[in-house]
Length: 187
Length: 187
DNA sequence: ACTAACATGTAAAGCGTTACATGATTTA
DNA sequence: TAAATCATGTAACGCTTTACATGTTAGT
Image 1 (spheres, rainbow over the protein chains, first blue to last red):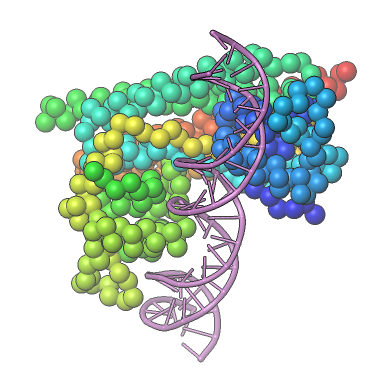
Image 2: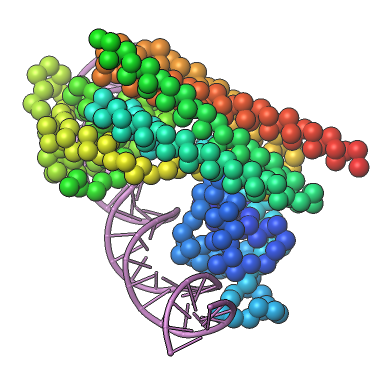
């Protein structure tokens, strides 16, 4: 029986399952440039908190690092951690994706809004999506052929397409907003 | 200056901005069948909590209802509430959408997973997306021509397309998973 | 010597959920 | 009259963030 843990804990453990030993600081940076595109990026303080919890569970250990001593604590996943993570991944009841689309909430309340400002909000969302798609594409390009990374590469490409799709939907919405404004101007 | 409030509070207030006076119970039901597709549906207990907060701020009042007395408290948005909500909607700095895709986290960790189970997980996500798209389409169909509801209708159609896109991306991913399995079988 | 970046953490507070409690109303 | 649904709420807990504290190391 696997300890019930929030998905974020498994995600942090997952970052350590790709064969590299990393510090909390490194994990935060890596999360910002990978996890971010399809899941979320936890605050640094939370990463450290999760690492403490994972260590208490015996899922990670801090290894006395050879090279870069500094102040760093380098973490490594344990066999027990890898096994627990594999069980979590293999669970068939998966939580549905969480989507909280603050932009769409505003559009939905558009009857209270200035149409021009609404337009700007949606256009900014489109631009943000284009940017995210490009970043995810860059991540995907840097993928290795190593079988450990093949699935991660698939997810990178999925992320790219997801954000491209968001941009496209935003663009369509802009068109509809304009059409609606035109109809209202006629009246 | 508008009181800083979580987006969920504005969403609840927003539900009351369409001209209907509703109880907490009704708000929960309506959120489940509309807000859900592009934002999120708060727990019933949170809706009641937000209503109390909104009432304390003077953004809603409970109106002595004529017809259906029961135990119900019917809430109505105040002028002050409508004005505060309009200011929030018109803010230009919009929080980016929050996406936590638990399915993709699992695919990303696919090197630890049973490929067949991974396939099932993705297929279930695709089916769920198809279902959500259909429900959002049903919501969109029931939209009125009333200008107050025009934007809401746009968001309904956006939601439909969004979930259709999710289904399509999942389908593509399934194809890539199969291709990957085939390549591995050859080796 | 100074600044920026590295690196780890604590404390407080807010958001949100689940589980539970309570009672009224409708339907069989 | 029993069950289902309506209807509102409380309590406890967990997740997550922000703001802050602290010290180190690298570059200029």
